Image (cartoon, rainbow, N blue to C red; front, side):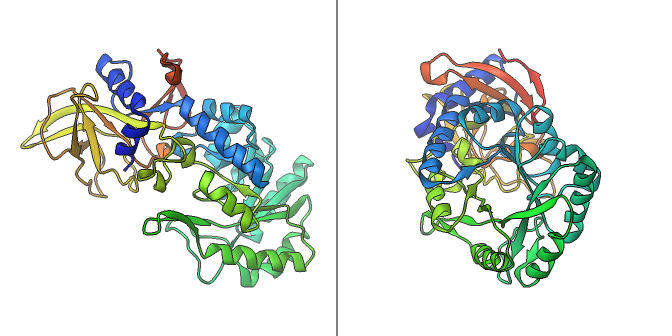
Length: 388
């Protein structure tokens, strides 16, 4: 999906990944991240956000819940991490990373609430009175005050399968009044997902129908005296969309893929965030008229289309990656032609590292031609090496 633009805009990363596979510095099924470009992308977003009056929580699931990257982003001035699920909160919280937002998209299980509250998250999203009550009970036990955010949905909701949940605007007033009677918790925010999507026909980010639910919820809650200090408008947060967040009355964004230059628009754009992640593997074998390379990093919505196969950019050849059946395990990826065994294979696609079995190599110094692997992690943010 992003391979051609990555070659065009960050060819040094592609060449380096080829070298690392060829020399055995990394093994197949490794994501290689250019930290220099990632942090440059982050700085640019922070600058735009500051000018627009928007606060940013960074997201790490797509790069494997990585605490090293999280620490670098905190140093730049982000307001904390948005932890999409409770396991991400546990991983980053235990590493000393400030938790900005947790509970969205995945609610905190009852068993985990106490641990996560002890990390002192800035805000917690709840989908129901029952979950708010559970948070309240633990907050009372810990003698702490907890700010809550409500996920709201409208009749014309736009929600992905496997992510449904929230409070319909029609029931919002009654439930909000009930929640605010609970001790040690207070409603201070609203959110929805997704609030923005990339329109490939218009070649730009557009707002979704969920914005209508946000606007309706704001009026309802303000009418009953609830002061909203956070209106969080996530999805596709990037340099392009941050100004839209401000225009639509939002206060917070949550950049994830934009950190690595892999938001959908980056597949065709030559401006904006720099692509800073590639997937590195090598040819395992040939069967019939097709070669196969080692897998492990597959994500069903990766939109992977092609691969660059070779030992360097000058001699490498582009090949098509054949679609993998949804019910199959990605032991291998299949190419539409044949190559020598053990030749490097480089790809660039939409990642969700935390759902893979890959490794993640963090490279610093690429911009000054002194690249070095500084850390090696598994797909869930556990360090497995200090680099080469």
